[in-house]
Length: 396
Image (cartoon, rainbow, N blue to C red; front, side):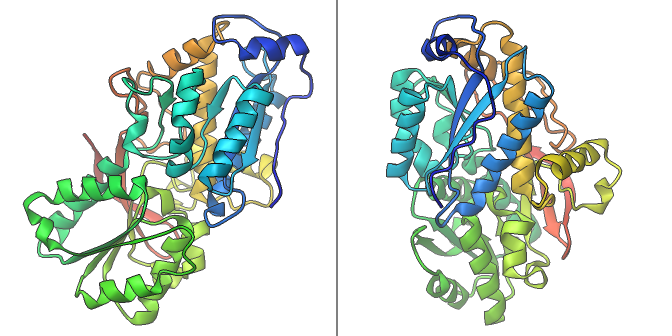
């Protein structure tokens, strides 16, 4: 896919551009320029849906007049989930497009590649689309704020769930050979505690690998009856499909980053995905129990108008929709002070924010000491059509 750029605002001034580049408090008449990188191509291209949904949400806001009288100009560029490309595109957004902030850029490794640069430039790296623990480090990276529950927290939640439901389980786990996988593994082992010896097979993959079939066969041969598939959508789908073809029937767990029915379970085969378990913090639009939920109805109406042709049941669309809503809340809270300092201040001082497509009981809270916005999840099981929630909201 060629370089992708989405400009939502239609009117801006040279004066507005120069003021956006400043980091002190200011007032300006131009659009609020937000930059973003996402993999619209390459092995993680399923995640491009997040950026497309965010663009569509900002278009809706612009159609209604924008935020505090300002239109949103959302510039999202393809990085192919390649860190060198992320660096190139991010520099372009900061130094040429002069964005006010980077918003919801996708991926752990790509965001790590630009974290020091953005913090040195004092450009907000806000609501990163990743659950790496390093986004919650205001001491060393005061201009970075994450969004998703941390991978360490998620790993602990799954480990405790396994011990509760299958205390004698033999567990296999696959992770990407990068920081995200290491975070999941660290949290998972912490959750297992003294039961870590029940982790009988751990293997890795690279996002450039053509297949993970050999790793799946090795894990089956370990005798594991639980399989935690900590993988990006493409590889998560491969894993489910391969497990089914082998006749292996472990309890399978997917991470929140890969529980999209459209991007993972459908390619894997819905019949192969029955019984798979995951953690959710977003409402599943395909859940019949939510058919009359006003928030779900509003979301589906928005999808029909602004994302026509896209799958409304894809949780990656819900992710982008929700992330854009949170960004809009922060910008609204900034009022007339659209400085970079104030954006970070507002993003790290959120109190009990409820967003429509978050599950009931899950609220957003941030502070300079803990800047991770979403810190709770709920377990769900796939029934062949949708995720079915069970248990209580879990957090720390």
